[in-house]
Amino acid sequence: MRFKSLTYNSQKFTREPEINKILQDKNLDWLIDAEFENAEISIENNTLLWHNGDWYSGDFVYGIWFNGRFYGGNFINGIWQNGEFHDGTFESGIWKNGKFYGGINRLTDKK
Image 1 (cartoon, one colour):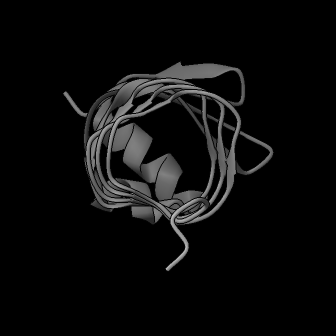
Image 2 (cartoon, rainbow, N blue to C red):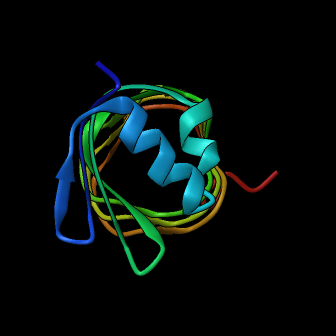
């Protein structure tokens, strides 16, 4: 299951077609193109909030990552509050807390 839930405008959605429509309407198509499962997300002030889930590939373009596991792909920009980064590339953003197990961290790996 890709989505566990999306909370938006004080409503909780669990059906993928409804969630995809909201994401398209909010110009968050990049999330539809990514590979992940069990995502618990919300949208507040036009910002994606990732509360939990497993990310496998694709570009996380912008948002706040509160918790979950990142196994591959690119974290393009945003705020990493907590969670596990196992592989992929952390391109830019703010790293607040969490565990970095592997991958490339462009904040610290200047080449």
